Amino acid sequence: MTHVTIGHLAERAGVATSAIRFYESKGLIASVRTAGNQRRYEQSTLRRVAFIRTAQRVGLSLEEIGEALETLPHGRAPTKSDWHRLSKAWRPRLDEQIERIERLRDRLDGCIGCGCLSLRTCALTNPDDTAAEGGPGPVFLEPHRRRTT
Ligand code: FES
Image 1 (cartoon, rainbow, N blue to C red):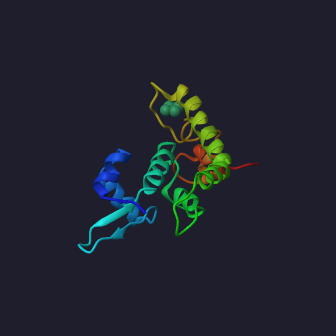
Image 2: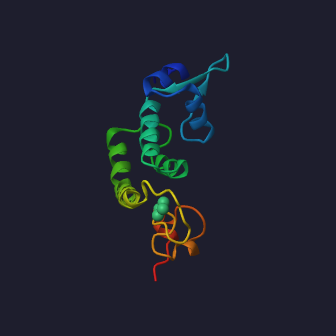
Image 3: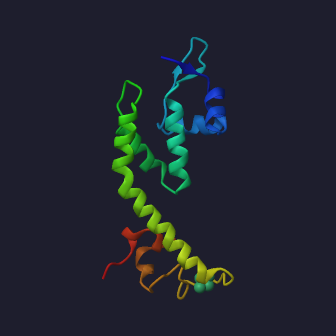
C-alpha cells in the first residue's frame, strides 16, 4: 500500500496542510505514523479529501460528510464501485441541497439592494411570516425547521 506525506496529500488535493489535520481531527480521514511520529496517508485518502471538499462547497456539514464516509469499507481502500454506491445513496440529499440553493437564489433576487433583513417582512429571514416559529437563522434554507401547516 502506497503512503504519502501530509505535504504531498495537501498539494495534490489543493488544500492547506492545516485542512488535512483538521479533517483528521474530525475523523474524516486517518493516517498512520512513522517511527519518527510523522503522518502518512494512504494514496486513496486523496479521493476522500476531494469528496469532503466538494461536499463542503455545496454547503453540506462535516457531520453529514462523515456519515457518508462511514459507509465506505473499513480496512481497505474503497473501490470505484464503493464510491459509486456512496454517490448513488447521496443523490436525494444533493437534490435537496440544490433545491435549497435555488430557493436562496430566487429570494435573493428580491433582497439584493434592500438589505433590511427585517424579521417581519424579509423574504430571506421570514419567507412566509411563519418562519419565526422555527427559531433564529435562515429557516427557509432548512425545510425541516419550517412550519408545514
Ligand atoms: S433584505 Fe429587505 S426584504 Fe430581504
